[in-house]
Length: 165
Image (cartoon, rainbow, N blue to C red; front, side, top):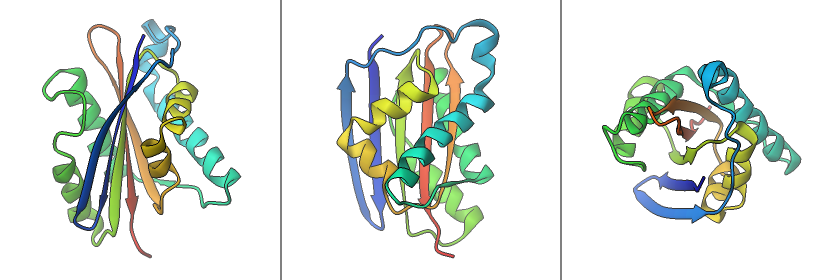
């Protein structure tokens, strides 16, 4: 399966959008009962992201429920083909998070699609300069939402937020 990635970085008024496709092959073992265990997989993605960050001397990202609501909704919208795979509506997601969390200094988003496990998603992002920049960025909050389409593909959305203390 082709593993496709997208990233978007929002810093104050600057918006960057890029598409990256690479030939990463993911596992095809996510059908049936394992496919419904997205909560564990979402936390596993965070584990691998934080393992990378702490290995670089960066602070681990903290999970946030408000961000999760937006991330999983976007993954569901992509999986149900209500929006195309990508970042449509990122500004709306960012503003919805901002309306609940207050002042935010910035945000970014990584998206992935395929028959992948948590480690394969993070590995793919780390081999893409834009995604890696988001993962290593000056953010302190995050969440990952996963949804599955009728054809079995998994849609991953990770939103990164920097909220000053």
